[in-house]
Length: 337
Image (tube, rainbow, N blue to C red; front, side, top):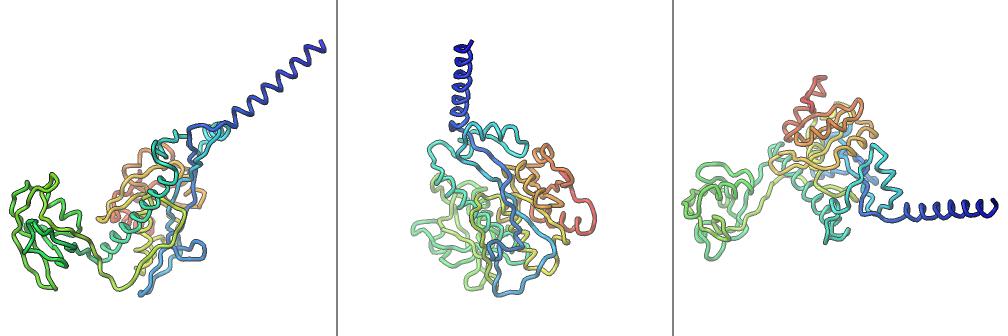
């Protein structure tokens, strides 16, 4: 009996040691959880998140909080099991976050670049809403291109066949809408004087083009910048745009409430879908949010993962988001998911 008891004890000890080893083994997964939320109207590390100089700004009694997802990039089996058992976390294959062939540093660099783009698009969309129009400017003319002798550097393109060109992307769409070899009437201003030129498109690199390099500028009599570190990805665009408008207008968009949200935004103000809705909803709830702005394409997922007493407000554009906030301020019911 004594020998048998020793054997059982040694077996149990060996099993425990093996279990500890297995639980501590790395697995090809990452754990997603609620990340920090940030008030775009407030400060981080003692600095304003949205900084404006050369113009007075308003203050808000509420908050407009962008939401994020926290990522645990190196996961052991023990952590993965805990994540599977936690409703606020998600355990996903590592390649969904860090694609094969890309290092963690490369992914983080791309996320940082996407974050910068989101700020630029937020600024463009918000300032357009405030009446600061975009100018589509000729940066250069190809020496042997269709526009040579007709357009020149510094010209501001205003229309194509009478249709307005509010953004550089719209100019590209209008040129590509007709086959190569089509004459187009290009409206432009040069040193403030309006003019037109008929330019016949030519197929270059498989697409109809007029042979110019273009850029965008958006003149405004103040400077606008962002100061927020350690956050990546494009999903803060909507909340940045709303923060800019709130700061540059006397009206308090929040009505004194904590409004959280997420969504990409493009130069035209369209709000696009993002990832991590379940974790962002948890983060918003923990931050005290009383409403959550959800991209229309994410509504179904948001409904499946809704948090108690956190209304889900459906938005497809910057205009819809502003209208929803106005409805909330008035005590009404905006369009819910």
